Amino acid sequence: ALARETNVLFNVPVALKAYREDIKAADAIDQKDVARRNTDNVALLKQNDSQIAQAKAANASPEQMNALLQKQQELQNNQKLIVSDYYAPATTRINAGLALITTGQDMLVDYGQNLIDEGLKLRPELRDNPAFQKNLEAARRECAKNREAAFSGEVKDPYQFSGDGTVP
Image (cartoon, rainbow, N blue to C red):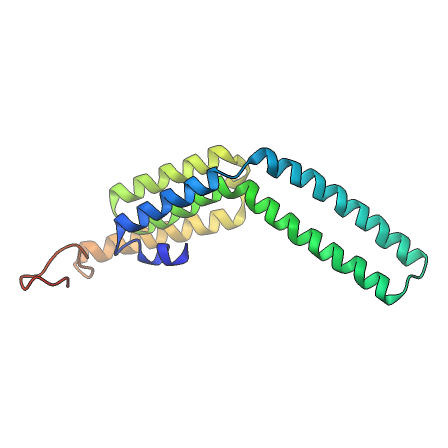
């Protein structure tokens, strides 16, 4: 996705197609399955916490403690993946929207804002997320910078051909 964000200014059609594919893939994640996996994993985390407490109380061997702690780490990693899947339909839209806003091109900025609005409609709790707020502000600053550069003539339209048939 980072490469797409970096190249959105120079290959808008390819970036837009990639964003649509990413959104389609995120939307294909079965959220009922995500909820089931979350319930199961949370139960396993609680069970493992209990086993760790019991092992500590029983002065378990270092090998037993390491096995339980390793299991805890695996369950925590699984939880991160589950949370990522839960948020994927929203964050995919938001990330694409942020990248489009950075272009400074009115039509793409509007489309980017629409994608962000869709993402926030799916997961409204993200609106107050500090990372989201920080990224939105950064995208708006980049938007203003790119608009200023385009207005001053510092940036050439990557689709504008020069007289010799090459792309400047």
